[in-house]
Image 1: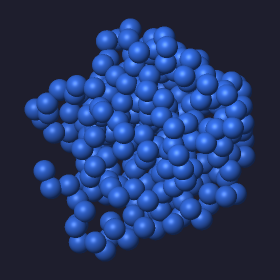
Image 2: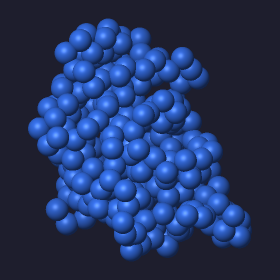
Image 3: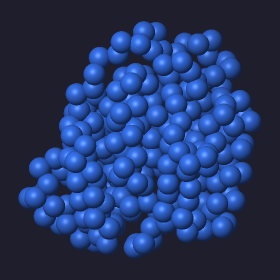
Image 4: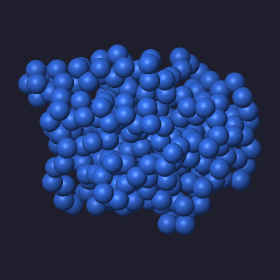
Length: 255
Protein backbone atom coordinates (compact mmCIF):
# COMPACT_ATOMS: atom_id res chain seq x y z
CA UNK A 1 0.00 0.00 0.00
CA UNK A 2 1.10 3.59 -0.54
CA UNK A 3 1.35 6.60 1.78
CA UNK A 4 -1.91 8.49 1.81
CA UNK A 5 -2.14 12.08 0.53
CA UNK A 6 -2.89 14.99 2.82
CA UNK A 7 -5.54 17.72 2.80
CA UNK A 8 -8.06 15.94 0.61
CA UNK A 9 -11.47 17.67 0.45
CA UNK A 10 -14.18 15.97 2.51
CA UNK A 11 -16.44 13.60 0.60
CA UNK A 12 -20.04 14.67 0.06
CA UNK A 13 -21.95 11.56 -1.00
CA UNK A 14 -21.36 7.81 -0.92
CA UNK A 15 -22.81 5.70 -3.73
CA UNK A 16 -23.29 2.01 -2.96
CA UNK A 17 -23.66 -0.08 -6.11
CA UNK A 18 -25.31 -3.49 -5.79
CA UNK A 19 -25.63 -5.61 -8.96
CA UNK A 20 -28.59 -7.98 -8.69
CA UNK A 21 -29.90 -10.77 -10.86
CA UNK A 22 -32.69 -13.02 -9.60
CA UNK A 23 -32.20 -12.03 -5.96
CA UNK A 24 -35.85 -11.87 -4.86
CA UNK A 25 -35.11 -13.86 -1.70
CA UNK A 26 -32.52 -11.50 -0.23
CA UNK A 27 -32.47 -8.10 -1.96
CA UNK A 28 -34.98 -6.51 0.43
CA UNK A 29 -33.09 -7.43 3.58
CA UNK A 30 -29.75 -6.42 2.00
CA UNK A 31 -31.01 -2.94 1.16
CA UNK A 32 -32.90 -2.47 4.43
CA UNK A 33 -29.94 -3.43 6.60
CA UNK A 34 -27.59 -1.23 4.59
CA UNK A 35 -29.92 1.78 4.80
CA UNK A 36 -30.32 1.43 8.57
CA UNK A 37 -26.55 1.16 9.10
CA UNK A 38 -25.71 4.17 6.94
CA UNK A 39 -28.47 6.31 8.44
CA UNK A 40 -27.42 5.31 11.97
CA UNK A 41 -23.89 6.62 11.32
CA UNK A 42 -24.99 9.72 9.43
CA UNK A 43 -23.41 8.73 6.11
CA UNK A 44 -24.88 10.75 3.19
CA UNK A 45 -25.55 8.14 0.55
CA UNK A 46 -27.49 6.69 -2.32
CA UNK A 47 -28.11 2.98 -2.88
CA UNK A 48 -28.04 1.98 -6.54
CA UNK A 49 -29.33 -1.54 -7.11
CA UNK A 50 -28.79 -2.50 -10.74
CA UNK A 51 -31.23 -5.16 -11.88
CA UNK A 52 -29.29 -7.12 -14.47
CA UNK A 53 -32.02 -8.90 -16.39
CA UNK A 54 -33.79 -10.65 -13.52
CA UNK A 55 -36.53 -13.12 -14.44
CA UNK A 56 -38.00 -13.31 -10.93
CA UNK A 57 -39.64 -10.60 -8.79
CA UNK A 58 -36.42 -8.71 -7.97
CA UNK A 59 -37.52 -5.57 -9.82
CA UNK A 60 -40.95 -5.62 -8.20
CA UNK A 61 -39.41 -5.88 -4.74
CA UNK A 62 -37.08 -2.97 -5.52
CA UNK A 63 -40.03 -0.85 -6.64
CA UNK A 64 -41.82 -1.61 -3.37
CA UNK A 65 -38.69 -0.87 -1.32
CA UNK A 66 -38.30 2.51 -2.98
CA UNK A 67 -41.56 3.62 -1.35
CA UNK A 68 -40.04 3.40 2.14
CA UNK A 69 -36.29 3.83 1.54
CA UNK A 70 -35.73 7.34 0.16
CA UNK A 71 -32.07 6.81 -0.76
CA UNK A 72 -32.75 3.75 -2.93
CA UNK A 73 -32.42 4.25 -6.68
CA UNK A 74 -33.27 1.05 -8.59
CA UNK A 75 -31.71 0.92 -12.05
CA UNK A 76 -32.55 -1.46 -14.85
CA UNK A 77 -29.62 -2.51 -17.02
CA UNK A 78 -31.18 -2.90 -20.47
CA UNK A 79 -28.35 -5.14 -21.64
CA UNK A 80 -26.11 -6.66 -22.61
CA UNK A 81 -25.97 -8.33 -19.23
CA UNK A 82 -23.14 -9.52 -17.01
CA UNK A 83 -21.91 -8.85 -13.47
CA UNK A 84 -19.24 -6.40 -14.63
CA UNK A 85 -21.59 -4.68 -17.06
CA UNK A 86 -24.14 -4.16 -14.28
CA UNK A 87 -21.51 -2.53 -12.07
CA UNK A 88 -20.27 -0.32 -14.91
CA UNK A 89 -23.88 0.72 -15.57
CA UNK A 90 -24.14 1.73 -11.93
CA UNK A 91 -20.84 3.61 -12.07
CA UNK A 92 -22.07 5.50 -15.12
CA UNK A 93 -25.19 6.64 -13.26
CA UNK A 94 -23.90 7.31 -9.74
CA UNK A 95 -24.03 10.79 -8.21
CA UNK A 96 -21.53 10.23 -5.40
CA UNK A 97 -17.89 11.29 -5.20
CA UNK A 98 -17.00 7.85 -3.87
CA UNK A 99 -18.40 4.36 -4.29
CA UNK A 100 -18.62 1.01 -2.55
CA UNK A 101 -19.37 -2.09 -4.61
CA UNK A 102 -21.38 -4.61 -2.63
CA UNK A 103 -23.02 -7.97 -3.27
CA UNK A 104 -26.80 -8.42 -3.22
CA UNK A 105 -26.83 -11.67 -1.22
CA UNK A 106 -25.92 -10.28 2.23
CA UNK A 107 -22.49 -11.91 2.08
CA UNK A 108 -20.90 -8.51 2.84
CA UNK A 109 -21.21 -6.81 6.23
CA UNK A 110 -22.98 -3.42 6.14
CA UNK A 111 -20.82 -2.21 9.03
CA UNK A 112 -17.77 -2.47 6.81
CA UNK A 113 -19.34 0.04 4.39
CA UNK A 114 -19.19 2.66 7.16
CA UNK A 115 -15.54 1.78 7.80
CA UNK A 116 -14.80 2.23 4.09
CA UNK A 117 -16.44 5.67 4.14
CA UNK A 118 -14.42 6.76 7.15
CA UNK A 119 -11.11 5.65 5.61
CA UNK A 120 -11.82 7.29 2.29
CA UNK A 121 -12.45 10.49 4.24
CA UNK A 122 -9.02 10.14 5.82
CA UNK A 123 -7.56 10.68 2.36
CA UNK A 124 -7.17 7.25 0.78
CA UNK A 125 -8.04 6.85 -2.90
CA UNK A 126 -9.23 3.27 -2.39
CA UNK A 127 -9.90 0.84 0.44
CA UNK A 128 -9.73 -2.90 -0.15
CA UNK A 129 -11.33 -5.41 2.17
CA UNK A 130 -9.62 -8.73 2.80
CA UNK A 131 -11.19 -11.81 4.29
CA UNK A 132 -7.77 -13.36 4.79
CA UNK A 133 -5.89 -10.97 7.06
CA UNK A 134 -5.92 -10.86 10.86
CA UNK A 135 -9.38 -9.83 12.00
CA UNK A 136 -11.10 -10.97 8.80
CA UNK A 137 -12.93 -14.21 8.19
CA UNK A 138 -15.30 -16.32 6.15
CA UNK A 139 -18.40 -18.26 7.21
CA UNK A 140 -19.63 -21.34 5.31
CA UNK A 141 -17.22 -20.85 2.39
CA UNK A 142 -17.49 -23.90 0.03
CA UNK A 143 -14.15 -25.74 0.31
CA UNK A 144 -13.52 -26.07 -3.45
CA UNK A 145 -14.32 -22.43 -4.12
CA UNK A 146 -12.05 -21.44 -1.23
CA UNK A 147 -9.11 -23.44 -2.61
CA UNK A 148 -9.54 -21.96 -6.08
CA UNK A 149 -9.81 -18.48 -4.56
CA UNK A 150 -6.56 -18.81 -2.61
CA UNK A 151 -4.67 -20.16 -5.62
CA UNK A 152 -5.99 -17.40 -7.88
CA UNK A 153 -5.04 -14.69 -5.40
CA UNK A 154 -1.58 -16.19 -4.88
CA UNK A 155 -1.08 -16.13 -8.66
CA UNK A 156 -2.07 -12.44 -8.79
CA UNK A 157 0.20 -11.54 -5.85
CA UNK A 158 3.19 -13.16 -7.54
CA UNK A 159 2.34 -11.77 -10.97
CA UNK A 160 2.06 -8.16 -9.78
CA UNK A 161 4.36 -8.34 -6.75
CA UNK A 162 1.75 -6.93 -4.39
CA UNK A 163 0.80 -7.71 -0.80
CA UNK A 164 -2.96 -7.59 -1.36
CA UNK A 165 -4.18 -11.15 -0.79
CA UNK A 166 -7.87 -10.81 -1.68
CA UNK A 167 -7.90 -9.06 -5.04
CA UNK A 168 -10.80 -11.14 -6.40
CA UNK A 169 -13.25 -9.97 -3.74
CA UNK A 170 -15.75 -7.46 -5.17
CA UNK A 171 -16.42 -5.65 -1.88
CA UNK A 172 -14.15 -2.60 -2.15
CA UNK A 173 -14.34 1.22 -2.03
CA UNK A 174 -13.03 3.89 -4.40
CA UNK A 175 -13.09 7.63 -4.82
CA UNK A 176 -14.90 8.66 -8.02
CA UNK A 177 -11.62 10.10 -9.33
CA UNK A 178 -10.13 6.60 -9.18
CA UNK A 179 -13.01 5.12 -11.16
CA UNK A 180 -12.52 7.77 -13.83
CA UNK A 181 -8.79 7.13 -13.81
CA UNK A 182 -9.31 3.40 -14.32
CA UNK A 183 -11.42 3.80 -17.44
CA UNK A 184 -12.01 2.34 -19.91
CA UNK A 185 -13.33 -0.63 -17.96
CA UNK A 186 -13.20 -3.77 -20.07
CA UNK A 187 -14.38 -6.69 -17.95
CA UNK A 188 -18.03 -7.63 -18.59
CA UNK A 189 -18.26 -10.36 -15.96
CA UNK A 190 -16.86 -11.15 -12.49
CA UNK A 191 -13.38 -10.35 -13.75
CA UNK A 192 -14.22 -6.69 -13.15
CA UNK A 193 -13.52 -7.46 -9.49
CA UNK A 194 -9.87 -7.95 -10.52
CA UNK A 195 -9.67 -5.16 -13.09
CA UNK A 196 -10.63 -2.34 -10.73
CA UNK A 197 -8.17 -2.97 -7.85
CA UNK A 198 -5.28 -3.92 -10.13
CA UNK A 199 -5.69 -0.79 -12.24
CA UNK A 200 -5.94 1.26 -9.04
CA UNK A 201 -2.60 -0.15 -7.90
CA UNK A 202 -0.83 -0.07 -11.27
CA UNK A 203 -1.98 3.48 -12.00
CA UNK A 204 -0.44 4.67 -8.74
CA UNK A 205 -3.47 5.56 -6.61
CA UNK A 206 -3.18 5.26 -2.84
CA UNK A 207 -4.84 2.31 -1.13
CA UNK A 208 -5.09 0.49 2.14
CA UNK A 209 -6.49 -2.83 3.38
CA UNK A 210 -8.87 -3.62 6.23
CA UNK A 211 -10.14 -6.98 7.49
CA UNK A 212 -13.70 -7.85 6.54
CA UNK A 213 -16.06 -10.76 7.15
CA UNK A 214 -17.82 -12.73 4.44
CA UNK A 215 -20.83 -15.00 4.91
CA UNK A 216 -22.12 -17.47 2.33
CA UNK A 217 -25.53 -16.63 0.92
CA UNK A 218 -28.57 -17.97 2.76
CA UNK A 219 -30.97 -17.85 -0.20
CA UNK A 220 -30.79 -18.02 -3.98
CA UNK A 221 -28.00 -19.50 -6.08
CA UNK A 222 -24.42 -18.27 -6.65
CA UNK A 223 -23.90 -16.43 -9.95
CA UNK A 224 -20.15 -16.99 -10.20
CA UNK A 225 -19.34 -20.07 -12.31
CA UNK A 226 -15.68 -20.90 -11.71
CA UNK A 227 -15.24 -23.02 -14.83
CA UNK A 228 -16.47 -20.16 -17.02
CA UNK A 229 -14.25 -17.47 -15.50
CA UNK A 230 -10.68 -18.80 -15.59
CA UNK A 231 -9.74 -17.51 -19.03
CA UNK A 232 -11.55 -14.21 -18.42
CA UNK A 233 -9.63 -13.55 -15.21
CA UNK A 234 -6.39 -14.45 -16.97
CA UNK A 235 -7.14 -12.08 -19.86
CA UNK A 236 -7.66 -9.13 -17.52
CA UNK A 237 -4.55 -9.96 -15.48
CA UNK A 238 -2.40 -10.19 -18.60
CA UNK A 239 -3.86 -6.97 -19.99
CA UNK A 240 -3.02 -5.01 -16.83
CA UNK A 241 0.35 -6.76 -16.45
CA UNK A 242 1.28 -5.53 -19.94
CA UNK A 243 0.17 -2.03 -18.95
CA UNK A 244 2.29 -2.18 -15.80
CA UNK A 245 5.51 -3.20 -17.52
CA UNK A 246 5.21 -2.00 -21.12
CA UNK A 247 3.09 1.18 -21.22
CA UNK A 248 5.84 3.47 -20.00
CA UNK A 249 3.56 4.90 -17.32
CA UNK A 250 1.16 6.41 -19.85
CA UNK A 251 -1.89 5.59 -17.74
CA UNK A 252 -0.64 6.55 -14.29
CA UNK A 253 -2.38 9.27 -12.32
CA UNK A 254 -1.08 12.74 -13.04
CA UNK A 255 -2.54 14.79 -10.17
